Length: 344
Length: 92
Image (tube, each protein chain N blue to C red):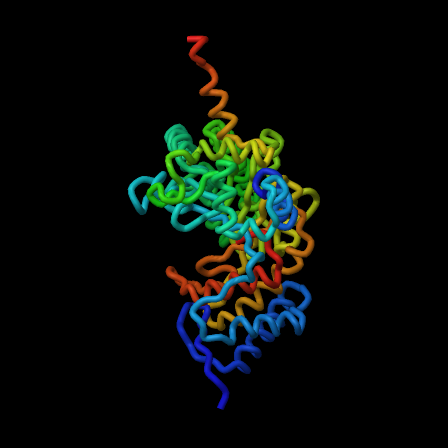
């Protein structure tokens, strides 16, 4: 009788599978990804390595000594312990984060802009007591620019009515407003001492959201040549809420990580973070094989460091508010080993 | 090096190891790096003064040394230097 391996589903549930079942899931995962993203399947040797990682009952696994990568964190100044500055210190001193990110709890550039003077003070003080690179992060979050929260007509209301032209015009207007806010926050935060700015969950509202991020990055890079600019994507595939938007002559709707990375690098980022979604109904082995297949062309062609998003619901990590360490370490090790990542 | 220079990992590790005078493998060896960090004043884990003691730089103090050793501009260091240097004792 074949041995049973304890592993997890994409929702975090602990299940038992045989090595043959895990191997079958790895093969199915890479095949599903290759079909969908038009990437090459993982090689037989790569699947063998993934089988070794997943066909183990050990609680923890890790990369080989010498293969360590940089660990960057979005939103780690959370005020869970004392002040937001205390949280940044905690991440540096006890979680050994390689970079730190202060953020406003609303985590979008539009609301952060309104409290920027206060955020600058916190950033300046945080810089005195931390050593790791410290940046500021938020989401472009284009939806906040629509009524009733913002000045622009709401395309989520217009689209179901078939008012396509108005919906597109609204998104184009929101792009410029969002880019202005992101650049404003970056300028102010550079004054407060940041080492980098993070545009997190870019593309969450679709192609216009991604365009706002790219336009902002281009302007920030021109104004601050030495500033680190990190972008983290919202999902594996840019949704075409507008459908016709382009950056540098490339249509944004439907872009996969390879082309997302190329445009982000062209705009001026120094770190690009692909986000590959987790399927909760499939095993972690299936999800990791799928993630690596989608991300691999991007990592091979990258001209800037790639930090794969690895967290709840992305990067092969279970879609659970408290992802189990046994699954997270396997997903992380697999990504570093196969993709030769620059960071996570 | 990734943040301000956009260096990929292999290049970044080689650069940093060269500047610190250690091997690439040493960079992730805490036994070696504790001495290197202390000697160059790069900061580290505090642990109630048992690891980083009162003579070692911490916080932004260590960042000054990191900027110098790695020969990279560090924004907060530049701003600290500009602000703190505005009123030197002789000028007050």
